[in-house]
Every structure is written in C-alpha cells, then in structure tokens.
Image (cartoon, rainbow, N blue to C red; front, side):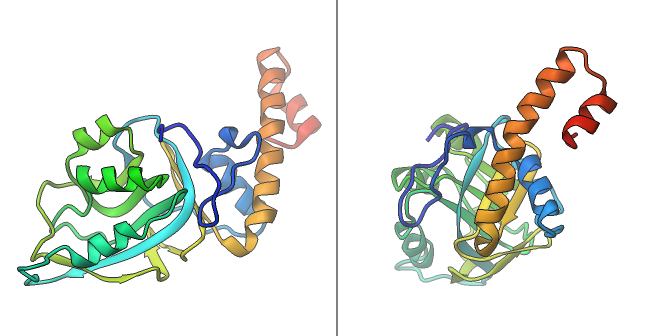
Length: 228
C-alpha cells in the first residue's frame, strides 16, 4: 500500500469514508479533545522512516519482553504466528516498553505484512532494514533504529492484548493513525462519534484555509467557524 493511502475495508480493518484522505493526527486529536478524550496522543513522536508517511488502521497488538535464550529449532515461532494472523487494514502495534536491546521489525516482516494488506506498523522500540522498508513503501514509525536481531534477546510474550505506547493504552481493534506529527488512538467504543467530528472538521478546515488565503483575518474566520 502507498504510504499516503487509506486501507481497504474488510471485517478486521478500517472502513474508509469519502474524505478520509483529509484526516490527520491533528484533526483526530482535536476531535478526541472535543469528545472529552484528552490523552489519546502518544507522548513521544514515533518518527516515520519516510517523511510524509501516513497510515490508519485497527490495532493488532503484540508485546515483547527480554529473553536470554530462544528455541534453536524455531526461534521466531511466536512472531511468525503473529504476522501470519495479520488481516487487511490492520495497524501493527509493537509494545516493547521502549526497549533498546534489539530491532523488532525489518524488511521481511514488512513484506509479509504488505502481502496481508496491513496498513502500517508503529513501535516504541527499534526498526531495522529501514532503507529496505522505505523501498517497499510500507508505512513504519518507531522510537529509534537498531540493526540487532531480537533472537535470544527479546521474545513475544503476548499478542492481541491491551498494550501501552507513549502513555496511551491501545486495545485490539482501536483505530490508530500515524503521520509526521505523531500517533493518535481512537477507542473503538467512541469511534463513530469521533470520526463524525473529524470528518466535519476536515471539511470545515478546507473552507477556513480558503478564506484565510483569500485575505480574511484570523479573528473573522474564528468568529465565523470556531476553528483554528
């Protein structure tokens, strides 16, 4: 999928709506604020490999923890099982408690996720093979980068559970969006309300932008629309 596109609809993914290409993390954040949810933006910016990347999808969560050994016959069993279960439109959310022992995602995992039509990946840990992930065009966001393999250093301890990234709880199925500004989480139970607000705001911001460019003052535009 293109780093600027929205995933296709399916039973597990996010169903796009006309105009959703105008949604941004800032618009979703403002819409969460208006709904009384004021802690939905990760408190650190997970940087995209490729500037301008944008991804939105339902969270598929996995949690890593330190490990001193691995199964020599099948060292990636849990990770393979997790990735082989990815559905179209899902955003992979990798929780590591900001661990720096290894990388957690690279080129081949990205290729498998792209084949499953995942929307992207975010992690509070490290990515590796970042030039190759960028060449694939897979939207990927991380705290940092490190080339070390996680084998015998880290292991999957849980998947499809509530995780915490950047001070925000993320449940499986929550809507997660990431772009150059950061990442925002929309709880699935409040999704319809927040997306309705966000789509209206995106439309209204287009009008506000046009009026400002035409020379109207900020005060005039604010009093007319209540949006800045």
